[in-house]
Length: 412
Image 1 (tube, rainbow, N blue to C red):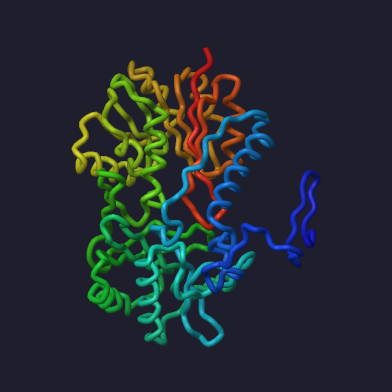
Image 2 (image 1 turned 45 degrees about the horizontal axis):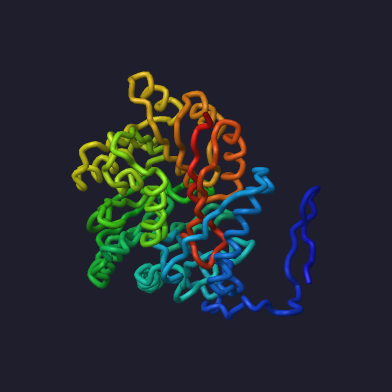
């Protein structure tokens, strides 16, 4: 039975108040706080059925929003092991009723932290670092936690990154700018007791904002980066790098991109929203040139470092806006044959879509993490491009999130 909580013109929202009959796909969740925690949503569904549901969500979005009636969607690429896969976690701090510092995901629909001993979707090294860090913090009575209501306190979030293939970890304390005299000693102990930890960083976020990290970071101990691999490509990853959450599954995702481009050796490729260059660097070098475009200058620096580390000669990165840089490349007789888009959840804006259309780019590979904005953008491109292939990839087991790779070719 469902209680309707919100009614709109074309849809309604509700919450389950009574289960009349269990689905055959329902299983018992591994996590003891699953019903409360908002970290994942689908632990109570067996994994094969999760994949079916994700395919249906993608298909429904393309039909309802994109107005595509018949779409040939390839079977979703599932994971080999759907647990302990997340290589990054940003966990809010709070104090419980006993005054103890806790950290965990928010309770569904609230900003109340649900503490947990083991998160079943986070890498086990993240769980271990989090537990030991909380133990040290709770030995210091004077350490305060940020209060969103009165904007006071010190600790905001615990940010942990793990190199799945290297077993390295980087820990960042996201705090306000208040004094944190105990941090050096805490960092020293953490580095001594957790050998996988390569560094401890402090990031300052002193604004009343939903943005998690601030602009200032300070190295406290060790190094401010880790290394990891996708396939045989090596990447330097800092606290604020964009790197896919599921390292092992990313290889399947990027292999799909590689397959869809079908390189002959003569292509000029643009990797838009290139981040630290993960897609561009992963692709085999059977192309004339690949150019990454990224607006974040620090990410471009990391990309250049990663290119050098992987000894690639025909891969370069430039800082700038995609809508400005693609026409510049064409004016310099370097028109891309293929543009790879891997945008944020908000998708592509109209300016970027119009740029691609106006410049008559031959092929587009669109990597999307949001079926809704993907369907919207494909609808806008449909008058000029044929959709050749669609392949969902499950990067986020136990959640409803879906990654999708789409190949589009210019209509003749």
